[in-house]
Length: 170
Image 1: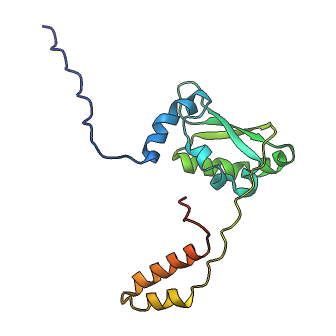
Image 2: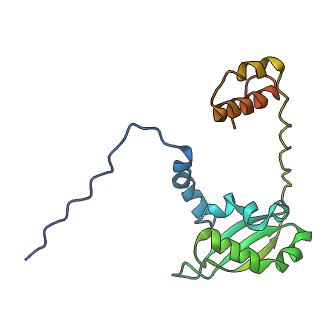
C-alpha cells in the first residue's frame, strides 16, 4: 500500500510589525560569511572582546575551517601584523578558550597565524564631559517631585548642554 503524500508545511504567517535590523543581519550576512569561510559572524563582531583591544587593532580573523563532516576541532586562521605574531602565539590557549566560549562549543582546536597588513583603526575619542547645568535649567527641574524622573531629566539636560546643534542619535 502506498503512503499518502505529506502536504508541505504552510509558510510562516506574515505580520505587519516592524523588525529590528539586528534580527535581519545574520540572515542577510550569513551567505557572505559562509562564502569567505565564516559560519559564525560572532567572531568578527566580538573579536576585540575575544583577544582584547590591543591585539584586535593588529589582527583579524580570516576563516574558520573544520575537518570533513565535523563541527569541532577546527582551525581558525588569523591575519596578524608582523610584530604581533609572536605575542599572539604566547596567548594562543587563552584565545582558543575565548573563541570557543563565544561560539558555545569546542569549535577551535588550533590557530594559524598569517602575516598581513592590517589598517590601524583608532578608537573613537571619548565623549566630552557633561556640561554644568545653568541656573535657569536647575530652577525648572526643582518643581519635579519624582527623584528618578528629575535625575533622568538632569542627565538629559547635561548631555544636550554639552553639544551644539540637534542631538546625534547613535
